[in-house]
Each structure stands twice: as structure tokens, then as C-alpha cells.
Image (cartoon, rainbow, N blue to C red; front, side):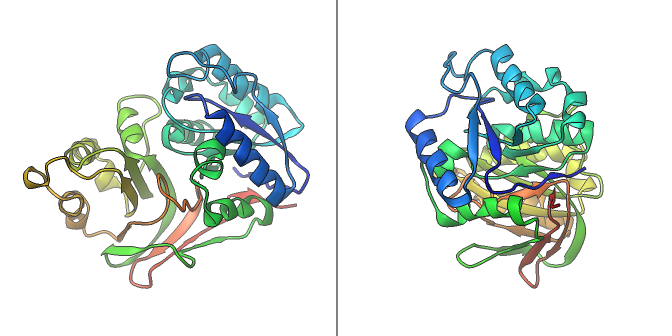
Length: 307
């Protein structure tokens, strides 16, 4: 199920479903998006709330999502930032409301669990993309800002473009639906009713601040749960800020990937600029894609309907 694409002048709902956004960075990001795409914004009631490490209570954050879904003026929902806390509300989301009001939902990092839950409960295509405060308003890059164009033009997506990286890991070509997100969030969903389904799909993973031994543990959990065997190919984003504190007593990240991914002998590419990185290239989850490692290209079907 695809949401409707955006038009100039549309209203976007801005939510904080995890941690509270930096307010100055949020202001910067809103101004840049407004100037580029001539959109308007409706901010969630909890956008400036702080409740420990959360942007308000669970009830306030959940209500903000439901409010944006019900509001017919709001044509898309974009997360201000990630952080921590989204898993606390996914079991209480009204998924019938999502089905009744299918809208663009955009974010990454802690929002990973929201993507997987919504897709598996409703079939709605959602977007892994740079967020307003943490990316557009802070670690600004023109490619990150340009990623929003796909919501307006509805064109199929081709990666990489200039300045973006693509490193072969396992050669080959594969076609399938892209699923995935932040690796630590994918692992935390195992054993729940929202755990990721990788059967016959291309799995995307990335993360931040996790040393190779932690990534090793996360991938072992996915392997033990059958998620790596079920996947037909792999797209691996950056593992940002993940250098081991003691390199002499650590595997390299490449050695970890070789052990869990390369030996599966399925098409795989790594070091793509998707996730916790600058620039951050946005992609939809739940659409069909073709990964051609030898040609160094990833083609992805559009995730929105353009009228």
C-alpha cells in the first residue's frame, strides 16, 4: 500500500516519537525544508516536551502520532529525530487508523521499529530518511535534503548518485522487497509480534556507536533467528562511530561481515550512505528493488502514488 505523494504547499506533520529534538536544529531544518519544497508544517503538541530521555510521556507521543494520522490537512508525517523510546508505543498504535489514513511516514534510527510494525500490520510503505532536527537542521548536506524530492516526483530511485559510496561484498544480482533498518532495533524486536520478516527479501542494516563485537552479537541473533538465511540479499549501510576501543583485541567490522554475510554467498553491498551518516540518502521500505552488485547499482521502485 502506497501513500499519496506530496505537492508544493502541502502540510507535513512533525512528530517526536522518541527523544526530544534540539529546538534550534529543528527550527533550522524546518526553514530549509520550507525554502526548498514550499511546504508548511504542523508541529506535534509534545514537540518541545521533555520526560527524562523521552519527548513526553508514552501517552503524549502516541497521541501525537494518532492526531497526525486523523488530521486530513496533514499529508505526510516526518520525525524530528530519533533517540530512544519508540518501541514503548508500537504495541498501542491504532493500526486500523493507519490503514484508514495511509500517509507518508519518514524517519530512521529508533523509528526502525515503527517502520517494521506498520508495514507488517498494514502493508503501508514507509521511508527510512534523514530527519528534520538531527540531519537537515544539524549535520546538513545537500544530498540529504534532496532525498525528499522522491516524495514529490514519485520517480523510481537509483543509487548511487555522485558523491555516494557503494562497495561490493558478494557479487550477483537480486530482485526483491527491501526491509530493515537500524540493526540494534531489528534485534530488539525478535520474539515480539513485530519482529522483522526477511523471507524472500533484501535486508538493509546499519547502526551507530556499536563496536564490532556488538555487531557480531547482533548478527548472531539474526542468524540464530533464521533472518539471515531467509534474506535473498543484503544492503549494508555505515556502522558509524564504531571503531573498537582496543583494535588489537577486536575483529574488524569487515571480518564480522565476512563471517555472517559473505559466507552466505548472496548478493551483498556495503558502505552505502543510508542511515547514520552524512550525506544520508533516503529509501522506501516495502517496495521492490534490484540490487546489482557487479554494476554497482541499486534501483528501487517509488514508494508513493502521484496523481
